[in-house]
Image 1 (spheres, rainbow over the protein chains, first blue to last red):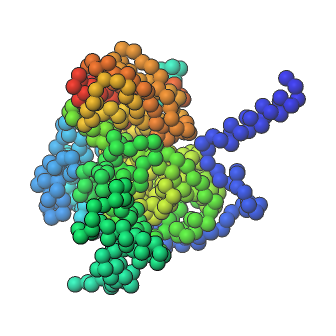
Image 2 (cartoon, rainbow over the protein chains, first blue to last red):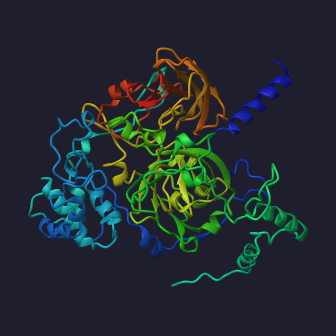
Length: 202
Length: 420
């Protein structure tokens, strides 16, 4: 290969790389020499962050102080949840899912029938997610209206109804984090990779 | 009761209408006189109209509308925890009109004042940053065309197909737009992401604060924070004033009304990535973090409720897309999958977009079964319904990308055929 062909090949390879889907606008930035940082916006203060930092992780990070019992939660459920999810958490699918009372046991094979109810006790891998979701999103018409104690209580109620915690549990951050959910071992990472070696993974 | 103030223009138009020459006031005087003569010629008292005479058209307006003869709409409407589907059978080319882009809402569409909205980036970063929309627009922008598809798209057609299902009701939870915004990588440079960070939580500003965990690698690859769609600011239903765009990933992750990105070492395990948006597999396992939307296609014409007028040449056309990259090929069958022929691809083959395909078909008038089959640049071939059910089970819940069929009867009626 002659020298100019090498150059042409290199230019072509560069063009192919540049037209890939990776997005770093700095690479093809045209204008004054690109700065290390544009220094826009403002540095967020701890108070600004704390005001919106509401997520809850499986290790318990983000769970607030407070506690509640299943008995207290039954009252919260009746007042704030039952109108959509039913007095017994049976739901009004598809908009308002069934929460509790699904079939239990490792032999339940959800993929055989979409009508098998997927509930907290058989399909939720982390108990902390329950707290986090209620805190974010429930009740539908007034999310954010429940106190930390009320959320612990209604979480305790649902877990107790699913047979995951005893009725005398006082659920707080530590107790919630310690719960092992029955569905946890079902979850596997995505193994699809498009076509690998000419074989589809679906 | 509010009374709208009456503008000078309205008064002038009213006066002109009263004088028998409606809305002519913006025309030069000479033209008004000529147009007035035409209007007069059309009045009841006038003699026989001049053959070929034309009526003056409507005046300019602030915002365009569709022809009154065109009725294309999303459906259903009125949902606050549900969907509204794009009318795929009524669209051509590849770009979805913004007002017909499908909508999926979990707690309604929030009305957000952009002056009161900020995006907070924090967690495992050196400099937590708060940005306004105005700040965001000062970074170098990028403009890319990508589809967004809800990972539940095709669920009704999978579970309870009926022959009268239209492309809209089968697969109307996908849409394709030109998006403008800032590369997430640009913001990563600003905040100094720490080495332990592997994921970030994207949180919306809707009533339910919808939140999804996104791999940091996607942020470094092609994710964007977008503020414009098809040349205009995002519409409220699409996330105004800003949304996350993760090209090729399931629609739910393209978090609308984006207000916060939190960087962390582990996924956050929100409800939308555990009890929902996961795929039960045969044998009892549940596949999690199935982000990419695999290759798929659907013929949008001929399709229900169309009726072919008779034998002869018909274009078989539709859209194909893959969340893993480029569409490499689309095959068409007119005999229910016994034989396949390659369709023409009509639009640029950029990654993670809707591509329009076309196959000119000479219908001989016999019963026919049309199908399309997309192949992406990984070599992945869109599976049949039989293959998809064998791989994932009849109770699977997302990623319904099987081959779709359309039966053409001898009378020209076209009906949906889910069993492929």
